[in-house]
Image 1: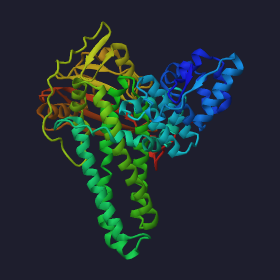
Image 2: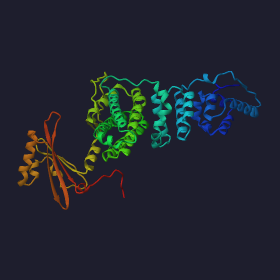
Image 3: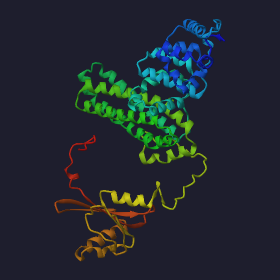
Length: 488
């Protein structure tokens, strides 16, 4: 057998299995070769030149040592070919091999490996990587036990390692009105705000000039308020896009991104508070940090998340994203145009024997009943004919109810001297002049809030009245805020 820079590690181990221990003893970097999956993927395409680079071993020395080991163990003399240029080694093309190589680079990155060495390794091993591969790599690392916080902590470093390859991919384009188009319009709007912030901070100078800071304070606060609308942009990603990716078993990248969203929200809040308190040194430092974080998130969106999402989701799924956007809203802009792809009409799932088809889901009769009885309120529904149609049977009802009231006129469920109030409410609801009524009473040491809501069809037709009663004694005593779980 000939040895050269282009010899595949798997070919070598297939013929000389004892070389596995040889490589592991050469460098702890080679311990991954004990993993059968690694050998079947990366091993099939990784060359000795690439192996030498990973182990930081001189190629010629490695070839000589391998030949010596084979000679010692088998008596066979291997020919070392030195006329094969290492640069001609082909990049990894097998998807599993590429993923394993990516994961190996990131693991070493997390162990503190030098960034430049890893970039070189990346170029030698992979050269071209797709956004989906980076997302899959992060997903697998989380599944294999790497804490999501650790992936998140070094997410920016991941991008730095893969940035040159990502730059080779065009930023995705999408027609006007498509969710991706709208996300990118918002990114451009946020960049404009951040550019204005950067210009203002240049005027204020470093360290901050107190007089200029005071003069520019109102303008700076206005820009920070506007930038805070990024929260809406992130909400749409979290509630519209991420669930559909998770349906395709892509959850790792969204977990990491969501955590970074929360970091950015917190950083914006801190910067705003510091600037409001006229603390220019702390406030401007915090503001610069959050602007940098938002710009990095834009890069990750447009070079990883959105291209991967376009590769993964169908037009029908993107239409679901689009149809739910208005409920959350938009940051700074409105969609340009109405995107209406030609897709097969979504086949509405027929509820099974125990499923009830609702506007936004399918729930069994038993689960609906449990949901209503677990709400911390008493519910009573009166239909359009003023008859009691339903009441929730919770563990501790505020007002007693019994099955005998079902179908009974609600007026007959109240004392005669209060019937006129009941009629006034129902008549106003039926006429459309009022939509709600509120009362509160103190009873048995409790403060009880009682609210009535008109129930209307989508065309405005009156369908009944919902009574909601709630013990708010403890709620009225709340102060400050509790942001952490506080169980005794």
